[in-house]
Amino acid sequence: GELEGKLESGLTSLEKAGISGEKLRAQSLITPSCGTGSLSIEDAIKAFSLLKDLRNIYVKG
Image 1: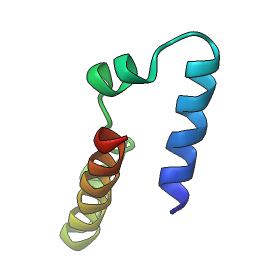
Image 2: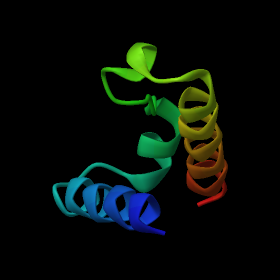
Image 3: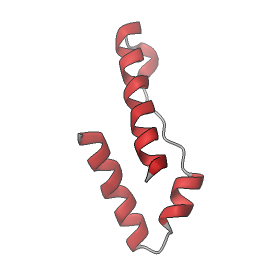
């Protein structure tokens, strides 16, 4: 998806700068954007669900 692509693009840039992908996966923290607290409950649940899915993809590498 779009979020996965953006994450991969950012990781690729960091790896090209010399940071190991393994280190990135071990030490990164993925969080929602600012403003999540002002969302409806349904939208907040969706945002955190997407975040969880992205994290699971990211950790598996």
